[in-house]
Length: 274
Length: 284
Image (tube, rainbow over all chains, first blue to last red; front, top):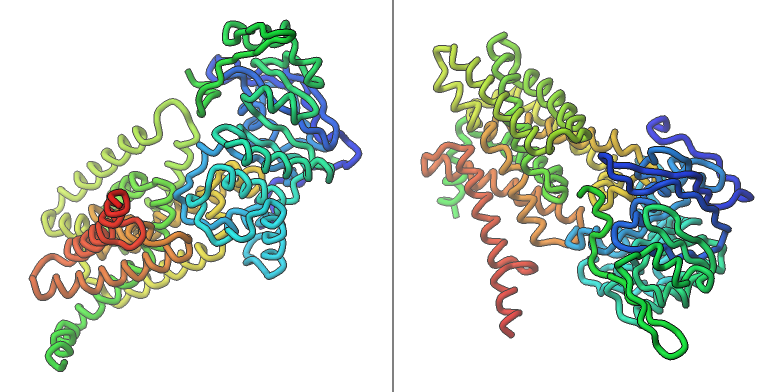
């Protein structure tokens, strides 16, 4: 049965966790991403921002190995993404079937099934890992709940616990903050702080430029191509933002600074099929 | 009490009724176990299409004098893999492609069958089942197929669970996604073939979907959904068969009607997601 699995990719802890080189993707003649190149260092927390349809989800799906780029290459710790089990993708909440008959603990256990292997059932050791992950995200007491019975912030934390149980070293979060109140967003960030402390690299797709500026080390500004990558102060400048958002952004002068208004509507962005 | 016992025992005096009951229970138990995935993955149309696509295989086996189960199994597995491959392509929407093939194959099966003199009887058996014509050999085959399906569902439980709940996670965990998808399709084909003699091509879908849907409304964990579905399916089979004996209704439809009734009961007065309680809750 072992040959059914993808061959494990080389995992070189000294290599950068993320190397994206000249990645392009076109679907049915529509260009979703064009010639995107960047490297990330271990433990970085990067906000991925850009207008609707900028290719944020597409970039994530290429990085986890769900989509193959038309050209270019992604290397995760020196190997192609397809063989790695160190990558976790936390889906947008709108992409999850919350009526599915699984409990909180079941969802977290899913992160461990590759470590368990085929034809094995969870051992007490596996459940200890699950409970430890739930404890770290503050969800242990809700472990038996059906996932639809949770608040939005709790749902997000369950998937983070799944990434912890998986032992992920690279975590991609797709719009984890949208629709959450401030305490729930803070709870997510305190978990992300812990991840950063243990050297886990995280990418957070978000529409919230304020939170991105305040809570992330680097901003990756995307609009089908890489507009800029760097610390918030260097990226959130008028010319770069105008370049990325174009007419979808308004700059309103306010005292010394400016207020930036962008079109930030809607789940289900990234409609590549028009 | 003795009245009830003799009422229950009377149909079992006939060996064909006893075999029919056993067959109905096997089908009633195995269908919802796999049907849980059909319900959760929204594959009801696939199940129905597959059941109809099997028809020409059954008819060809019949014309050649082969066991019907063999013809059904070969066509079912081929069709499941074919549909799996078709769903990877983009020229045409999956359900449209399935619809075209399903109707065409069904027509081919009926056309082949219509060349025979015993057309009407054969057709009704294939469409609606012939539970009372189950032989001891059929029964063994059904039991063996059901056991294989059950073992594989247990063996790949956590992989099928991830594949159904979160396909992206299945990829990031580097599970053999294509293999698992195809295995699931083939298992559905095998279960349909197993059920063919009990309820026929036209009603197989009910066995797969209805008890699993009732169980879905009652539970919050997948294993419970499978167990409860199996219990409801078995109950539907037993009650349906007695109904068929005493009310003189065809056995396949009697079983399906019982299952449908159970579903409606759960839908309206079920303790968890029942519409009745939900309305009360919103009023309160």
